[in-house]
Image (cartoon, rainbow, N blue to C red):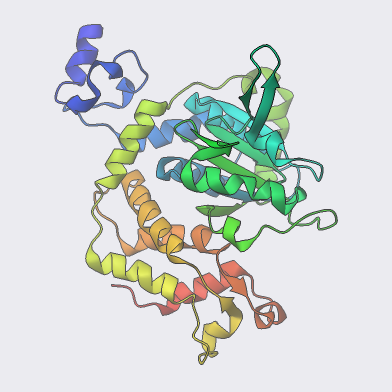
Length: 351
C-alpha cells in the first residue's frame, strides 16, 4: 500500500518532499503526480453537508476565502447555522478553532492578550489571547464597541498582534469569520469602513427552503450523525491549493475587466446619472485585488487553468456588497447593494 502511494506521488513537486507522506492528501493525487483540486472541494463540501443543509453559496464562499487567505463577514438572522458552519469548516480542515463572543463589555485585551506580572521572576510576561488560533469566530462582532473591533485590524491585515512593545506572529493559516445580525440595531455598533474593507467577502446567510428545512429536522434528530466530521483538508493541502490558484492564468483583458468593474462603483462628482445616482462612494483597490485572487480560485475549482469573465462575475457580488455605500435614492427605489452591483455588471463591457 505504501509503495502504491509513493508511486502515485511520483513526479509531484519536490519542494514538499517526504512531509507529504502520512497526510491525507494522497486520495486526491492522480497517477501522473497532479492533484485533483475539484475532488478536494467536492470532499470538503460533502463533509460539511453532514451538518449544513443547503447554503451552497455560503459554503463556497467559506472555502474560497480560506484558500485566498482572506476573512469573511457572515450576515444572517439567528438560527441559520452561521456558527455551526464555521465550526464545521475548522473540523474538516483540522485547524485550531477559537470562538469569541463579542459583547459591549469586551476589552481589547480579552481578544489579543495582555502583559501579566510574574511575581516569581519580577518581570512582565505576555499572556496570549484567543486570537492566537487558525480559525477565529468573532460572534456578533457588531455588539462590541469600536475599540474592540479595531483590535482586529492589525491581526487581519498583518497577521500579527502587538502586546506591550512586542509583536507576535499569528498562526498560519489565520482566518477570521465574523457574524452579525442584520435585524437588531439596539445595543450594536456599526463596523467602520476601514474594518469592512479588510473582509474579503460578505456572505449573506438566507432562510432554507421548505425541503431543506425538513431535512434539517431529521438531521438534528439523529445526534450521532453530526457529532464528528472527517478531516479531508489540512495545512499542506491548503498550501498546495494556494500554489495552484497562483498559477491560474489571468489575461490582461480580464484584469482590465476587473478594474473596470471596481472603477464603475466610484461615481465622479459630476456624474450622477444612471446607476451612479445610487452610489455615494465605491470600492477601494482592495476590491480589485480580491477579484483577482478569488477569480483564480473559482476557475481552479471549475477545473480550468485560466480565468473567464464568468469567474469574475461569480465572485463580484460577495466581494463588493460591503464595499459600496448606497445613496438615499437607492433606498427610495428599493434597491440593495446586490441589485446595484448586478446593474453595474450588466453595464461594464465584457472582453
